[in-house]
Length: 494
Image (cartoon, rainbow, N blue to C red; front, side, top):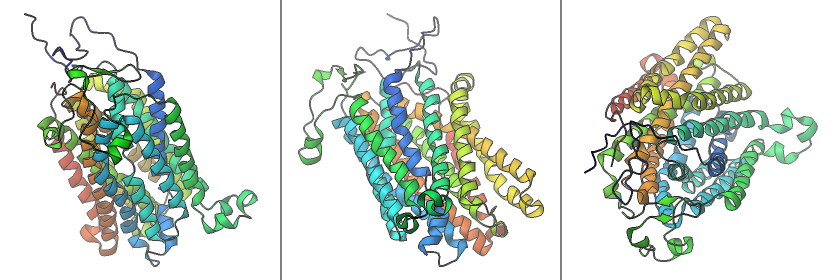
């Protein structure tokens, strides 16, 4: 009898048909690291760029757009309520549909669902740029959320084209495109809003851009999503074996998927072997401790992170006497762009070595702990700005806050490893990621509305000395840190 393998942090979690962990790593000798499949991985990275680009392009001008549509009636202290509502309704509608999109991808394949999401991104962004009322903004963002299940599906595809020897490397590269999108998105939004005023030689004679001053940045991101749709159609290969056609799934009988080769692994069109012998599991069988703990850590960290990131542009835009810094959209866009760029570079260069040196659990806990100084720097920077104005010390504090935001974001990549490790079988990778993303979307629906409403309440009623929103975010970070201690030191073996 073979001696039992001792799992370590690189031990894969999914069993091959023979019962042996797929691609198991031995302590001695250490298996060679599998090269990343760069052709397909690069296509996925490019498609992923459409997500942050379309979401972040509105960040610099959304507070001003809320003013322009007249919903605040000139009361700047209520801007936070409506900015938070716009963000929250996107995530609320996404939470209602993303699990179903992910489960659909287990049945009809990842590629068709991904293309539907890209189409939804483009249509919703064109509509957002043409909206002249607050309800138009709301409906556009809800359409975006309802048709978009791409985040969970892309994560499933990455898990299917990697193995335990190179998944940490993939996790270090994936955020690079995400944060590149968060870099150029705010730049596009901040530079191209009101083009008739900023570029009169080119757009000054256009009555259309005078009537729709925010359409140009929205159309740039929407057109990029259309381009990604064609790239996916021609270049993206399927990573799982479809069990039925999209037509049968959406318009026919969902209960008759193709049988998976009598329990044997099936081969996707790109040659990836997919063990679907266990079949797709119902939702109740996904609600196991491993999935709930990993998804819970992801959701709670996302709650705190989105609360900080949605307060950030409002905090920059609100006048100094009301608790902000009073910056214009171009300056806000530049700061957010620099944050995204730094985040992507640091994730690419530092995540894999830090993961190997510290271990996934310690890296998650350290990243979560850094949220506390990030939050504390909001009131500290405001106090210094009131005393000294926008001098070098204020910009140093803003820079320190951005660096800490970058370092804290390593926790996101760690949760990706834990979630895929917790999947009960390969046939349910999409559903597992969809369940985790559904929980995250629900938290992200709560986070912007709660944090920006608390920000406005702090200003209007001076609750807790005007610092109520920061104490609330500290509470969120505390719960997130406690949840992290439930993670095992090494990912689960199932």
